[in-house]
Amino acid sequence: MILKWWNARRFALVMSLVALIAVSCSSGDPEPTATPDGPGDVPLFFPYVFSGNFTVAGEPGPEGIPMFARLGDGRGPFNNTIRAGEYINISIAPVSADAIGGEITFFLGHPDGDSVQAEETYVYNRIAQPQFIDLDLSFPRLP
Image (cartoon, rainbow, N blue to C red):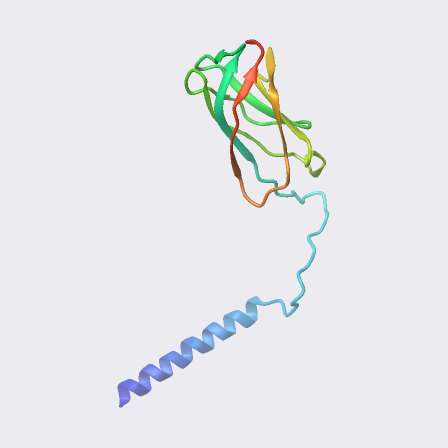
C-alpha cells in the first residue's frame, strides 16, 4: 500500500515538472513569428549533390581531373573525379535567393585556371533537404 502511494506521488511529481517545463518553454503565442530580415540573417539553402558518368569528346573522361559547378555568382567546391569516366559529389547551393531558378553549370578544370563547360545544365529549385542527382555530363574537350 505504501509502495503504491509512493509510486503515485512520484508519478504526480514527474508530471508536474513536465507540465512546468512545457509552460515555461512555450511563448504563449500560437502564431508563428516571422524571421527578421537583418544583416546577420542567413537564409538556408540546401545543396544539390551530383554524381554520374562523364565523357570528353565522346570518350570516358580521365581519372583525377578536377570538376566543379557554378550557380549564379557562386561556385561549389571542386572535386577530383574518382575514376575514368565517373565523378561523384559535385555539390552546389545558391549564395542568395536570387539564384533560385538559375542554371547550374558544370566545368572540368580548376576554377582559377583553364576550365571547360559541360553541354548539360540543371535548374536549381528551392529544396527542403539536400538532393542527390545522377547526371551524366558531356565535355567537348579537356581544359
